[in-house]
Image 1: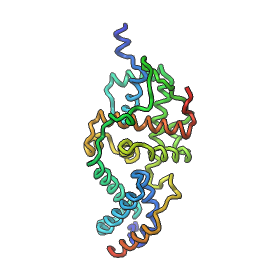
Image 2: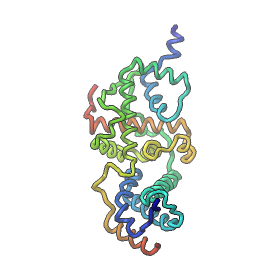
Image 3: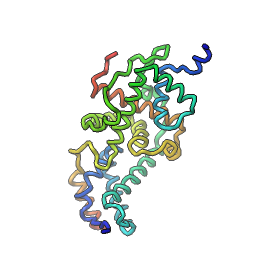
Image 4: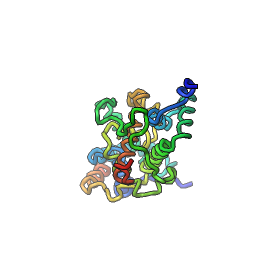
Amino acid sequence: MDFMMKLFSLTCKDTSPLISEMMDHRVPLLKRWKIKIHLSLCQVCMYYKEQLQTIRSLAKKLGQEDVPVKKETTLPQEAKEKLKLMIETNK
Amino acid sequence: MNKQSIDASQWVDRYGDLMYRFTLVRVKDPGIAEEIVQVTFFAALQSVHSFAGRSSEKSWLFGILKHKILDHFREVKKNRIYDTSLPEDQDPFEYDPSGHWRKMPQNWNLDPEKASENQALTEALARCLDDLPEKFREVFVLKEIEGLDSEQICNDFNIKPTNLWVILHRARNKLKKCLETHWFDLEGQD
């Protein structure tokens, strides 16, 4: 029984990198089971998982063409003039 | 259907700021971002003839911009070692000898799917991202903002898969810690 427990049990320290890893590729079945079992018993690791998913969802939003942040940031006027000149010359 | 047309003389006024901001989210340095926008416009002028009009002028320009941003990342990686051995690279969270969190993750009380509707929180993440050490920021941007798959990042940037998982885990943890300090005000709570 002890052997079985060891086989399936993970600590939070083991689980934290695996939660992250699971977001990046398909982890082997046994590992996935172990993570699932740990998460079903550990509320704080579940919070951790949701936090990483929240960060992922915010990052996805940041990546959009209509950038949701830095709205006050514009190309410096001088750079704009230079670009316009470059475009006019190479059109 | 009307074909979309190109009007290069309007590019800077129409898309300049947007392309600049799009680039700044990814490369951080304003000088480099300016340069990438310039290189993009130049490349676009060279390939105006290949613009088929199937997409809008804007999507076409952004397509070129994305390529130029990736070119920039490929260029920097020549001088970058993606190791994680330095003290500042370590996991910002600690565990006790039995493997429990020393500082328990708290409930953020957010639906991960809807979190991005929160404008101020998205801005907080952008600031935290700018504070990440460069190698973590680059890899995180490639994976989570550019949406490259892990295999492509490993191949293009010469990173071993196990190292990639470590870098992404550390990057996410650093972002989590930063958000908790500056946004959720959870730092110091147990």
